[in-house]
Each structure stands twice: as structure tokens, then as C-alpha cells.
Image 1 (cartoon, rainbow, N blue to C red):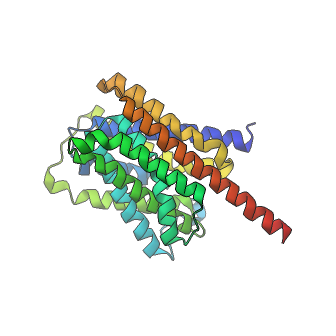
Image 2: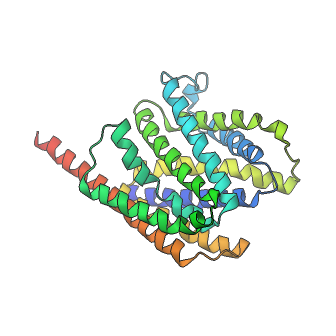
Image 3: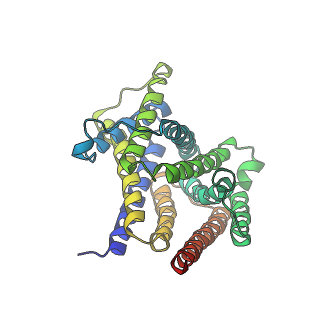
Length: 294
């Protein structure tokens, strides 16, 4: 029998594998319009969540008293998802993954405005280090006027706001309902892209495209389960395995070799996010001890 920390560790590892496989398929799917790939991500994500809705909620699973916040979560999530899909198709896999690690940096900044949180000197130092890392990674793209380097940054901004809205929603809403509405919004948005010309996939390609939705759906669920069972400080460093996977598969499938600048920038971004996570854990311990003393 696994302990809670071991179970959380396992969920995080499986989640990272699922997200990495989804990224690979999205990058591979260049012959299909992004809107069509979004449809597979949303529709097959919806199918997955129907299997985990509690029986007692099947008749009214869609009910919520926080429709406005769900809408904001979906809009920010859609912006993030479309941005990362474009980035994966146009940039090296390791570069996209490296920049995507910066989302906690943007979340720290946004939390000041949306959650009225106080950010201390250590987290501001982490933000500065993270932005230096992003500049190191994107500098070749900026000098060559490669506009696609902006999309992973837009993804980070969108994902940061997603994290804030999920934090607010999770106080009253189950994880599966939050994810269900997001998958539904992806599906509805994708249908508007049909006039742009969808491509009929072969059977093998249909299976692969369907896996985008299945991997995306289960990865989100397992990520939430990981944080539910385990300490954040234990499982968070595992996220950086995604960069190892990106370097390996990027080279194996597309012959991509990450530059020294990409690796140096990724290192700085990882250091900055680890500082943020460590300060979050420290802050929670302080609050907990004050509560006990009171």
C-alpha cells in the first residue's frame, strides 16, 4: 500500500507523462487546422469526465452558482491553450516547455492585483531571475523578429489567471466540474473554425488526435489528485521532467537540439519557480503556526 506522498508522487509523474505525450501529438499535427485539433482536445476530454462524475450528480452535474467565474476560467484557459498549440507547432519543443515553466512567475504578479496578496523580496527576486531566464531563451527570436516566441509567454499569462480562478472556484466547485466546463468551451469554440476547412483524418490519425483530448483530460485530473494527496514541495520538482522529455523527443522525432542559451534560460526559470514554491510553503507554515498559537 502506497503512502499519501508516494501516491501523490505517482499521480504527478503520470500527469507529466500525459501532458508530454499531448504536446508531442499537437506538434505532430501540423497537417490539421488548430481548430480541428482543439475539437479533439475538448470533445474527448468531455467524454472522459463523464466517467468520473459521481452518480448522485448525474442528473444535475452541470449546475453551478458561479457561472461568471467559470466563464473567466474558460476564456483565460482558451487563450492559453490556443497560444501553446501555436507555439508547439512553430518552435522547438524544449524551447516551448522551458518558457512555459515561467507561469508561476506571472501568477505571482497577477496575485497582487486579483488576490491582494503581498509579495516579499524573495518572490520579487524570483520574478526578476525568471524574466532574465525568459529573455535569455527568447533573445534569438527577438533579434530575428520571430513573433512566435510571444505565444509561450501569452500561454504563461493565461495559465497564471487560470490558476487564480481555479483557486477561487475550488472552494465550492468539484475539480471535475471545473474541467468539464473548460473542455466544453474548447469544443464549442472549435466548431466555429469548421469553415476554415477541416481535414478528414485517416483511422490512425483519428486515434492519435483523440489521444490529445484523453491525455489532456486525465493529465489535468491527475495533477489535481497529486496536489490533493502529497506535499507540494515533494511533487513540484517533478514537473521539470517535462523538459527532459521535450529534449529527448524533440531530438528523436524532429532532430531538434536545444541551444546553450535555451538550457541556461530554462535553468534560471526553474530556479525562480522553485524559489516561489519554497516561499509559498514557508508562508503557509508561518500562517499555520500563528493559527495554532492563537
